[in-house]
Amino acid sequence: MRPTTLIATWVMSLMTVAYCARLTAQSSQDPNSDPRYDELGKVPEKYRAKQNPLSNDPEAIKAGAILFKEHCEECHGVGAVGGKKAPSLRAPQVQEASDGTIFWILSNGIVRKKMPVWSKLPEPQRWQLVRYIKSLGSATTGKSVEDRTQKITQEHSQE
Amino acid sequence: MPPTHNILGFLLSRSFAYLLAIPVVLAALFLASPAGAQENPYFVAYDHNLEEPGSLEVETFSDFGTQRKGNNFVSYWTEFEYGATAWWTTEFYVDAQSTLQDSTLYTGFKWENRFRPLKNEHWINPVLYVEYEHINGADKTMKEVEGHDVESDFAPPNSELRQEHIQEIELKLILSSNYKGWNFTENTLAVKNLSNQPWEFGYAIAAARPLALKGASHKCNLCLEHFIAGIEMYGGLGDRYSFGLNNTSQYLAPALAWNLPSGWTFRIEPSFGLNDQSHQFLLRYGVSYEISGFGRMVSQLFTGKQ
Image (cartoon, rainbow over the protein chains, first blue to last red):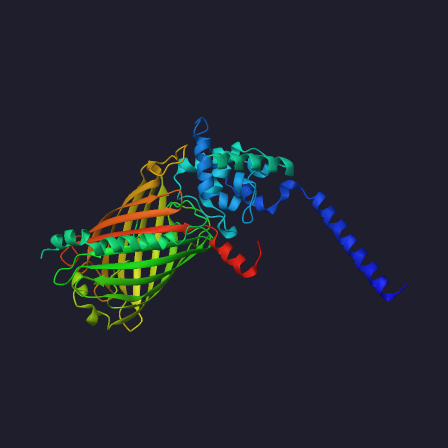
């Protein structure tokens, strides 16, 4: 065997092993252990239990959608599917979190990770945002995220 | 001529129209990636809300002031405010002024930094402020009032005032709270002129609230939640050797901000002097425009990464 063939085979084998290792790591990763959502678990208990005072307000989701577009979409992406700067808010970690938890994160930000403090929005507007975010529902498969994003984009373009 | 007569004449003059147009034209140059702003209406006081990371806010303001024993003036300043991180906002100012029947001149620059030391929201939220000023004595922006700054300091002609060169370090402790839609803020100010002058002190207190707390369920520019009304009071507190209100100027100023969802904010604030050492009347007005994702755009420009 010529030396160049040997080196090529060695490089190919190395790349194949690296690729397989990456696939294995991805498939074995627990979706709930994504460190980007760690802050949700750090919310103090008394705030987690807070009820959304606008949970019966039929206009809250619409108002929340407008606020989301104005203040959050730049980082979290259209339909909150995630952007370059911030993670998806459609992940189960967020969708399964209590309203009080999301409200606390909005109010306090995650300053060390570039999430700004949104306490400058009055409380009712923060609760409207919570209603909107929770209304999006969980989207764990790529296809449904794309479908929802497309639908939301169409809705926005029609407005 | 009494000052009120001068104000009316000035407001009706063509030069006022130009001055009003300058900020609008400048801000129109930045029509890209707007972000919904939610700015309090203050001109002097600061609250604890910093610029969002990566966002650039371009602001241009003017301040018309009456002057006894001298000529009325309009000062202008343009600010470039950038959110470096969620806990650090940095800002660069360029100042200028026009004194009626005198001249128009550039008066200097300022570089300001605000730091949020605590990561969570509290009842009272401290922000530390450090500013370097390199201005001349003709600077009339009055972004803060300190020490024994009084109206008569502004009376001499620009040719005389501009001879003085000032380099100052300014420190502020900003204590601010948001409660039930209200913002309350208190700023304590200490200024050190680097040319061996004593420490000077000042303050600003302010409160503001949106006219409506809930967001509307339809898009609108004139909905009440886009308007924030407030009031601020500010003035000097003397210096290290003569601390107190004696021989200082004090002002009370109602203020209004209109935050448009497109990223524009318009602000206006009439200020009224509370003692004989103060200007009788100041009218501040300005416009700002927030460009979201500015940092990323610049980064893409230099790295080519999408």
